[in-house]
Image (cartoon, rainbow, N blue to C red; front, top):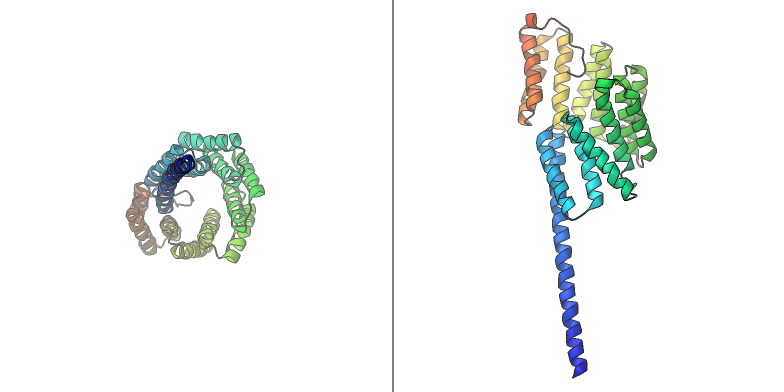
Length: 300
């Protein structure tokens, strides 16, 4: 009888323990599902150029990751948030995000995100260099990221950022070499999103050189690839750049054609900053007496 009672108690304990474990696992899986859902929504809005709403979703994902002490996901979300904050010109928030991610990674001896962290550091210092002109420090971060690149697409990404950085330093011929390295890898891997970025940068370089026909060729290719990958923000930027090229070529009909197309894309993805800038460009074409300078600034 005692043996039977002992077995019954043991069975009940195992059943309760199993139920608790199952319940805890269910809670953890449920939270991780929320993290992934918010992350997906944030990345989708990021690609559309909706950086403000992307930040909201990513902040929600980070909050969920904190709730279950998921350190790896915290590092990942913080480095992505750093990128979004850079896009929003919120340097303080970008600094908080990227250095918090680095702090956690070091404390946990987690080297998995070294590539991503150095990329974000490069982008962060690249943004600061707009004021202090220290683009070389940002260049060093991208080079460090390259050492941790474990795949061809990561290497292509590094080459692309190195090229963009050199373009900002006005080292245009060197920039082209790096961008073409990235382009060759992306062509081999059929990375249409990456190719859109590569041809976009090549187009910007040709605008700086005032080689407008070559710039038109590159931005047209970039537009094609961005349409293939349904990159709304990229489509908008390429349409705007092509409009600017036609402004420089004194073809106002085509300039307005592309600028209006860019305007409607910007409105559709709810990017008020770009809507305003494109409206200014359209006004410059329609009222040339108010716009007495030729637009060659690739930051437009």
